[in-house]
Amino acid sequence: MSEDRYVLLDRDGVINNDSEEFIKSPEEWLPIEGSLEAIALLNEHGFKVVVVTNQSGIARGFFDIAMLEKIHAKMRQLVIEKGGEIDAIYFCPHGPVDDCNCRKPKPGLLETFAKDKNAHLNGIAVIGDSLRDLQAAQAVGASPILVKTGKGQKTLNENPDLNLPVFDNLYDAARYLSSRP
Image (cartoon, rainbow, N blue to C red; front, side):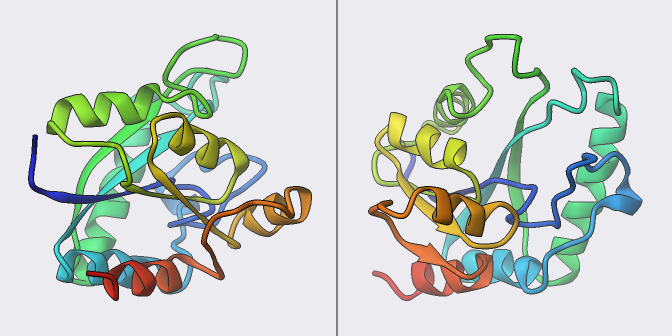
């Protein structure tokens, strides 16, 4: 198994501002304050950062894979400008009715990451803002972390008994992970 240390991040609501209208272009992709610096901080402390994201806007016809690649190119470039790097991006292009295994809360994206990187999922930090992010992490024995950005505060309000770390934002979660041995 790989000796690399990874942190898996949801995208919308964790790294960038989310939208009920979907993020359909690079112009609409706007980072949450401190999120790019958080990725750089994780990298500085030896973590490889991987993005794991549902992108049902593709199935819904709001944008195509070429546009998603442009959005991700902007995200990667802005992270580089802050001194960080995104190691890989995994996305589910399917909609809620497609019954695929890759759409969170199902664990398929995480399992694909683990297979590709020869990585253990047990105990790996998975940071998200929605219940489905946390459920996907729990399904594979990973360690879910909730951030209050995006849908995070709503997730916390609707699930007050969550027994897991909760942080105001990705930067605070990154500081927490970076301070651990």
